[in-house]
Amino acid sequence: MEDHQPQSVRVERRPVSEQESRRANGPDWDRYADEYQATHGEFLGDAGFVWGPEGHTEDELRVLGDVDGRDVLEVGSGAGQCSRWVRLHGGRGIGLDLSHRQLQHSLRLDAETGVAVPSVRGTATALPFAAARFDIVFCSFGALQFISDIDVAVAEVARVLRPGGRFAFSITHPTRWMFPDDPGEPGLTATQSYWDRTPYVEIDDATGVVSYVEHHRTLGDWVRLLADREFRLVDLLEPQWPEHHDRVWGGWSRTRGMLTPGTAIFVAELAR
Image (tube, one colour):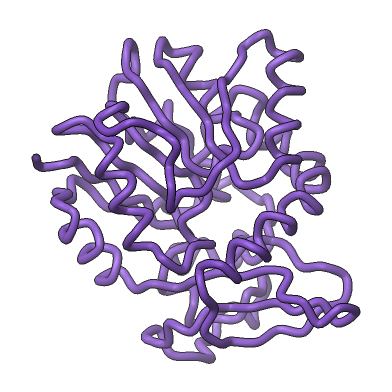
């Protein structure tokens, strides 16, 4: 789960609709964007491509393949760091994010780096692009975990991809949902069922409004979601914690990372 929690919240596990998820997570990321970029911006790089808190980069993993001359969509693009990397490597990277404030940070980095990423505000469940528009769609710890109607989002990716197009995304490793979101020793003890798919919900104590939602799917759930939309799974990466990496990011740490995976990266291609 993200390293994020408002100052005074009540945590629950309960069903949440797509509309309620969107109402919570859009404004939440607007509130959190400044802190997020200040805390993690240097680690991510203004035009870097990091797949997860372990720090593995696209230069290292080569998940997307050759992006040169390709039309590439980043879903949940934040400040556009990954799409900026795509553009520096010859791809036509475009960003999409639900958060207005994150997109303002993207404009700031456009100006600071001189590498502009065309970006739009939108949701993964209704991508504002024509069918067969892209060669590659990717999501690096972006929108997918915050969506209730994930089948709709995967269908939208299939719609905008060209035949044979690649879909790659990183998420919190599903097995992490068995453990407390704690970077220390308590985070190594399983306390809940891996098969409990009830969403994680934060409620603002002051207003009683749902302020943050994250959804859990098992590894099998993700494979079935892809197969149902005619995707062929090409690879599933579970990056190991680097030997000399000591950075703590929310529940990610060396303590946990040396023993259990924190990130899963799915790589699929559209069969049709």
